[in-house]
Image (cartoon, rainbow, N blue to C red; front, side, top):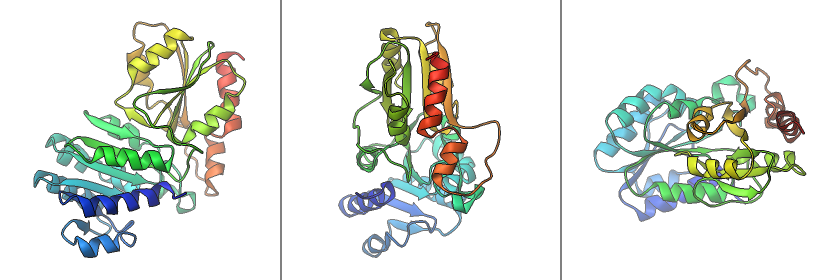
Length: 297
């Protein structure tokens, strides 16, 4: 099975060959893999080098010229370094594009803090009218990319080296388990760990690969059918979706536990992805302890 990144690159090459209105802008990252597409479409595969602010502005300029841009690099460079350009060149000018990152919160731990971006979704969330996809499987990534190309919406597609065993293709929250003592929401590649952590618990498990727009109706339905104790497990900054949960349940007394990348301290180790999962409490064992403690199991 191809990784999410390889799936994205293969699918992008197919899109470029099929649709003359699509262009991709790169900042050296993945340029070698798209060299063939660049030879066939030199005016629509643009590598600006390690100039990430220019990367974003170039994408917005292509959108103003009538093309559908795909803008791609690591999230710390795409969203954090290029945030002002995202805010002004895409959002403020009200043009659309597909921003695609690879690396998630800490998929490249040996590269250190420069390549970590647990706050990327929270930053995008501060801007209106963005769709945010967090696929948990390469097939989800392919489908979400293809669905993002038509139209002129603003889309952030967050790819990861981590993946669930199986894809779950659907709109909004997909209910994978039914229970009465609480509702556990899993976003993207944390699903398999959440399923392992909640094995044997009387809880409803919801899954989403698209987290913005937030499926308020789906969450309300699950809570009203079960319990107003909600756990949200996201593979980025803990609490990123807390305000959306509060809005969805504004008239329903509820409890919320937000699990994700920790906010209280910066993890400065290198190691492997699994070491960072453990440090942030996002491994299956830590998730099980947190969920059981919150639900009083």
